[in-house]
Every structure is written in C-alpha cells, then in structure tokens.
Amino acid sequence: MPAQASGTGASRASSPDRPSTLPAKGSALATSVSAASPRASMLARAPVAARWLVAGTAAAVALVVAAALVRDDASLDRIEAAAGAERAPPEGSAPRRPVIPRPSNAVPADELAAANAGGVLALEALAARYPKDPAIFRALMLRHALPPPYHAAALAAAKRLLELDPGAAADDDVKRVVASAAGGPPEAASSALDLMAGPLGSHGADLLYDLAVGSSALKERAAKRLAEAAVLERATPALRVAHELRGAASCKARQPLLARAKADGDRRAIDVLAPLVVGKSKGCGFLGMSRCAAPCASISGEIKATIQAIEERVGPSPGAAPAPEGR
Image (tube, rainbow, N blue to C red):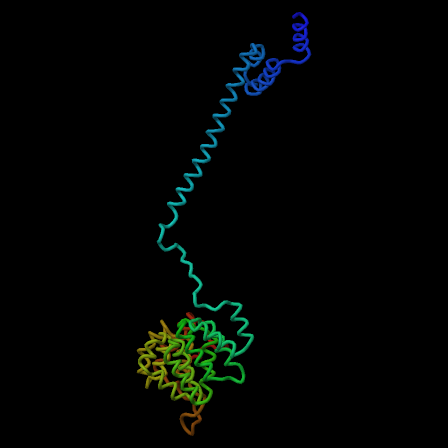
C-alpha cells in the first residue's frame, strides 16, 4: 500500500493534472476579455473553480452572440428574398422589358449563311423549308438583283418579304431593288409600280413622286399612280404638299398651300417654289431684250419666307445657293 501510494504521488508530481492546466487557459481567456477592467488582478488571484466559472460564462456568451449573428444574417437573407419577390412581377404577367422570343419558323443563322453562299437554288430550297422567314426572301431578293438582274424574280421575293415584314418597306435595299426594276422590261416595270402604289406604303409614294418629276419613260404612269387616292392617303404630309404645289394651276392656287409647306414641307417643296421667285435675265419686253419678272412675283415675299422656314427646319439643299432677291 505505501509503495502504491508513493507511485501515485510520483505520477501526480511528474505530470500536471487537468485542473492545474485548464485553469491557466481559462485565466488567459478571462484576462483577454476583461483586460480593460481594474478587476483583472483580482480575477487572477481567484480560486481555480471561480476561474473555470468565468471561462465557461465567457464561452457561453460568445456562443449566444455568434448564434444571434447567424440568425440575423439568415433573417436578412429572408427579408431580401421577400423584398425581391415583391418587386418581381406577378407570375403570368408581362415583364417590364418584354423580350421578343426568336420565331419558331426562323431559319438558323448558319443554315442561311450556307445557303446564301450556295446561290439561288440553295436559297430557294431553304425558303421551301422556312416559308415564313423574311430573312430568306430578303437574301433571295438581293441575290436575284445581282448583275445581270432578274427583275421579276427579285420583285417576287420583295413582295413576299413585304408580306411577312411590312416594316421592310423602309429598307434601302428593298427600295433600291424596286426602283431599279422600274427601269427594266415592261412587265417588271408594271410590277414595280404596283409595289410602289401598294405594299411599300409612304416609301412607295416617294418613289412614285421621284419618277413622276424625273425624265423616266414611266413619268406619266408614275404620276397617274401617285394621283390615286389610296396612294396619297399613305403618303407623308411633306410629299402631299409638294405634290399639290406642283399640280396647282397658278400662283393664286399655290398661295393657300404655303402655310402647310412651312409646317410640313421638305426639299421637294423648295424645288417647286424656288423657280417661282426667280426671273429670267432676258426674253421679255421689246425684242425680248428685257429681264423677265418672276413667275409669282406678286407673292414672292411669301414664297421666300416659306422657303426660309423650310430650310430652317430641314436644312438647305446640298449645294443650294441663297434664295435670290426679287426686284
């Protein structure tokens, strides 16, 4: 028994037991937590049990604070999610910025590129597979318009393109192809005029006006189509007033149109009005040696004011000289 007691005592003396080790760690923790307190020295002199109690209490407080922080973060996440759900549009309602989906009948871009590289036959085969995709018919129209142009085929593709996409009437390539076809064979010219007077809308009326005031062989036919009530109804206000100014029989008949020209007219109205205030340098009087008065000299002041108002709104014509002064 004494030997056994001696062995136990030796063991306790050679290696510190847990109570003598852990209180040191607990003391360090308590000291770090309350370093600013004047009672730190008192805590260091406290019994081991008291220091264990302080350390346990500090650990418990730390756990409670951490749990509160975690709970608060989770609460914030839930609040933000709820706010986002409130800001989002209700299910089934239209989005604020509607996204136009890709049409189901649209040809894939790579297939269209391959067919375009393959030529007319490849494009026509693709058009048979995707008969409602305007992109194919635009490609066909441009392909048929290449030199030497196949006007009838190009116009047929343009017509189908306009049926599928009426907005294509504003496409410069469409207008160019149709205007070019108007100078082609008689059958193609008639089809081109039909497109100008119909599916091309106001853009077609503009093309008809250009033909009617130009030197084309279609001048009279274009003027006749332009005079159709349905065509003029689709024309822009600028074109309508220019058309009426050109068709007026006298200066007196033009005078009531000047207010509309000021408000709506463009360079086409200027082209009609400018010659009316310019007199010839000769050709009048005795033996035609005297200067001729301007055709509308009686209202030249009003006409010049109208031209100036139009130019202030749309800008002067390229290369145009200043409006001449009347006598």
